[in-house]
Length: 452
Image (cartoon, rainbow, N blue to C red; front, side, top):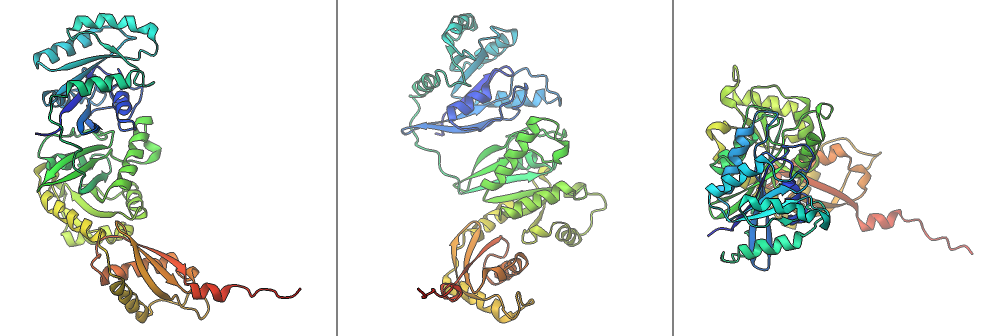
C-alpha cells in the first residue's frame, strides 16, 4: 500500500499554495496574489517519525482562467481528490462563506471524503468567531489558521497525522535514483513528455504557450526504482516576461537544471533554433550537466531533413553542448520516449563513474604526448604532473600542474574533449581544475632575506 495523500482544495486565492509551503517548511509552490497561479498538481512529502504522507496543492476550483484552461485545471483537481486519503477544504475567513465554497462542499460530499475544514487568513483571535458560518458546509467546525504567519500550523499538522493514524506506517518514501529535468522553450512539448513517461495525464497539456508555471516533480516507479521527472515552465526572452509569475517560473526552471542529474533539453523540430535555445544551452553547459538534446515533434517537421543533417545543424548552433547525445521523439505518441529514458540511465552511469588514478593519469600522458596547440607563455608548455578525480556528476578532476595560468579556457576545453574520448565518459561534461604542484610552488617562492 502506498503513502496516504492529502489534497488541499478550495476556490482561487484562498492561500492553498501558501499552506503547502508552510506545512512543508520550504518554498515549493509559487505564491502570488494573482488568482490561478497554480494549475497543475504540485506535491511534496511530509513526515513525522515513521509516518509520512504526500501533500498535494491543487488549482483554484471555479477559476476563470485567462488561457481558457479551466476545464484542465478542474480535471487535475478531480484526480487529486478521487485519490486522496484526506482533503483539506480551505476557505477565506475574511471573505466569509461564498457560493463557490458551497459548490466545493457539495462536490466533496458526493465523493464521501474525509475532510478537514480550515479558515485561512485568520491573522488574530478576533477573527476566529467569523469562521463559525463555515459549519453550515457540513464538515464540522473549521480550524482558524494563517498560512502566511504559521498560525495553528502545528495544530493542523497534528490533526492530519491523527486522521491518518489508521494508515500503516511505511517510513520515508524511497530516494530517487535519478532526477530528470525537462527544459525548453514554451510549447516545446515538455508536459506531453512528462505524461508520456508517467503513462497518465499527470500535468496539463495545452497548445497554449506557457501552460506550466511551476516546476513540478513527478515521481515514477520504473523497474523497481524511483525516478523524479521535473516538468518546468517554458522559457522565453527576459524582455518578454509579462509578469512576476513568468519571472518566478524562469527562476524555478533554472533551479531545476541545477538539481537535476540529467537534463532533457526539448527542442521543437518545427521551429528554427532561437536565442532562448542558445541561452539555455549555455546555462546547461555552465552547470556542467549531463544532457540529451531531445528533438520533439519530429513527425511534424516540414520538409524533414535527414537526421544527420539536423545533428550537424545542432552542433553548429549549440557548440556548448557538443558532448550531448541527440534523440528524435514524438511525445504525444510516446515515440522513442523509452529509448531516451534508457539513454538517461547510461548518461547517469557515465557521470557517476569513478576513474582509477592510474587510468586517469595514463590518459593525461597520451594528451601530453600529443602536444597539440601552441605554447602558452614563452617556451613553457602546460604540464600536468598528475591528476585525481575528486567528484562525480559532474566528473570533476583536479590536476597538479606547473603553472595554472597556462591552462586557459580554450586549453581546458580541449583537454576535457580528449578525456571524454579516452575514458568511458564520452557523453557527459568533464570539469577540470588546475593547481600548482608543490615543487613548482617552492621554486617560485622568494628566498628569505638574511640581511640584518
